[in-house]
Length: 199
Image (cartoon, rainbow, N blue to C red):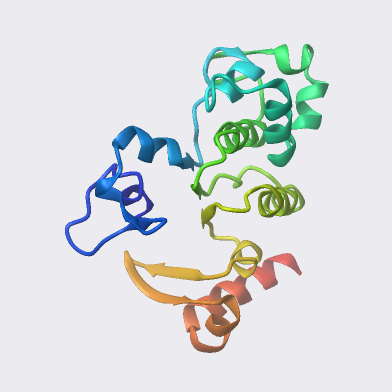
């Protein structure tokens, strides 16, 4: 569904607008520049950490790189790498952990300050405390950005303005977390199952 926003697929009916402009009216390069997407399994290429982050914005200053890395909760682990931001990443980022890889990819998306940011289960490899820090940072630095988070974590859903519930590809709920808790059996089931896991 979110792949409709950057027009990786075109809609068959209805409309999608960004800032009141239909996405078909945007130049594709402009649209892609304004939409950041971080997938669960993103790709890092051979090169330094800073080069990988700057792939999102080639002319980014060091201050912008550090700001994006801090927002993605990546700055501290980057400094702990052998050469910090100049550490060479092996192909696919095989010399960093899955959670570190996800945070570098989030930093790469953030450095562009996109109008729309899509996080597709992109914090699945980090613990809940790290995810909370990232969400807090996103709220702080992305004033004018619409954020879509695809997740199965109930604590992430509860921090959203609106939650859309999909069941077998069908939208079965769309409301605030509070209203869904009152009205959606599926939402309550997800909530209850994760509370049991935490106990």
